[in-house]
Image 1 (cartoon, rainbow, N blue to C red):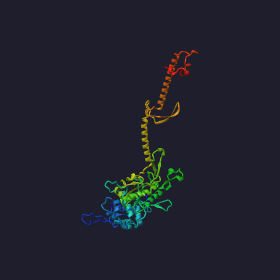
Image 2: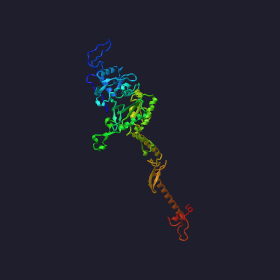
Image 3: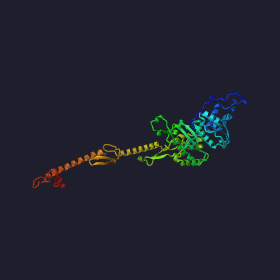
Image 4: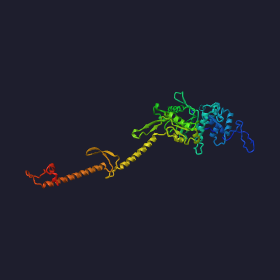
Length: 481
């Protein structure tokens, strides 16, 4: 497994060719270069080291690709070709073919070339992969597409307003193999990119030249999910008190630390070698076929009463972003070129596309906004139910209250009283009724006293004072006037 690399610094002067006798200009007005016997083409130590390191990453490349990656400000690839010829003279690189555009392809030669490149990159021979012998004989079309993808990341877009690139060639690795559980199957990304300085600990890159059935491309993402599920023993002392069976961690968290986004490490799909419509359809077809690998699981909260709104859990999902090589080369990785599977069809920059859609945090924000709106509407409604006597604004429209008749539901109405004021109003009305009844009683007594007495007992007609008969039997309503 390859790790993050850095170019080793040459021991001698980087800007000097091998020492030799000063050369005379071949023609007046031309610059004379010193050409050593060991490196007759006059390449510098620094450039040869850079070329070895780049070929150690790319495995096979053209002089033009190396020039754009290593010396982007150079007017031509002449110095790169000089370095390649000098390295070929040492038996460290070789050319065994041409691209379809008739550009010569170069690769490392033998164990010596791999070891020399490994020394530059600071990697052991076991991590250097193969020499890609024979790849150039068929044009190395897939390798060229991978190289152009890496170049677009490093250099940025070619458009005038395009964003710049990110990192260097040494942030990349190719021919990295990951063994799936069981040991018989492997996952082999076309390229692996590490950019922790921008929040991308690792990005697996798949370059699709539209030669493979969409089903086979989609199957790769299922294999990635199986790979990312693998856990290894965690020897972190902070977890020493946990049971051994629980002290595990996903292998990629140890190999590529710094992950902060939900889900597994992301995978980028770069499609090319077809028309715009065909490439768009291909990205959609792969997305549909691989939905189980990247889709996550949908969750809802019935208690929130959100009308079906929810969020996705990405703990067992592979984030997939897709673009075309043409868009990537034009706008660069930080431009609006990426389509995140599961989001709308808009194109986003790399970091925007890596943010998962429909997360729990996004749902919580939406739910918070819904609750705030509902609370504001409720408060407005409650204001219309303010008590006209005391100004009390209720919290709820209906409440359970206890009174003389026991527990009852009290519902506020616009212009209506609160329970406390209602109780006071009832007490006032009861007092008024008692005063009115007493007045009627006194009036009845006065009226009855003016009538002639009973012929038998000589008492007041209407019964004993305060009795029921006093008001109801003898003192008829017509007598109480």
